[in-house]
Image 1: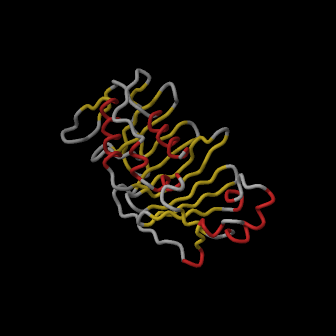
Image 2 (image 1 turned 30 degrees about the vertical axis):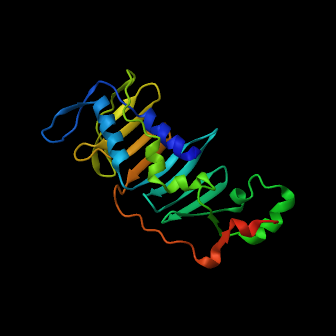
Length: 228
């Protein structure tokens, strides 16, 4: 899914260098930017769940994302170009909803009225592997696209910053104008990634993702749309 690819691209844009960054781990050791990014990637790759929200590039505009990713369940919303996508995954079952602009995108005008009478304000129950939208709530899909390590001469120490009240160290990519922020102590789960006006925030690492399926009265199966 393009949104997750863009998220992973943001990770890559915030990668590392050989410049030392002082992170207070067990003994206040100096950690190079290469090591810091590798540690952050490793932490992301082993996480059980997390919450990501913010803006990312999407074509010539931006997309707003707010996603809770877990191993078997997750939920979230993506907004772009006037369209709204809502996704819930519960124990491997994926439900997709959204505004009419999203639901009718690419649908021939002659079919829209009949389809809207059935799906307006409803959730579509997607068969397994019928859509890549379930990747929006799957931490495994996100982790699959992560490189194990990154390095570049354009990366350097980005300096300290307070991120939501947490003391953070950072890596700066001079070519992309992008930052990666991780806590100065503890497991280096990303706190924030930014490039210009695009900012992605992360929290709720390894916390349970609690989501309920939509009420049955609000669910439409794809098989119900045949002939519409």
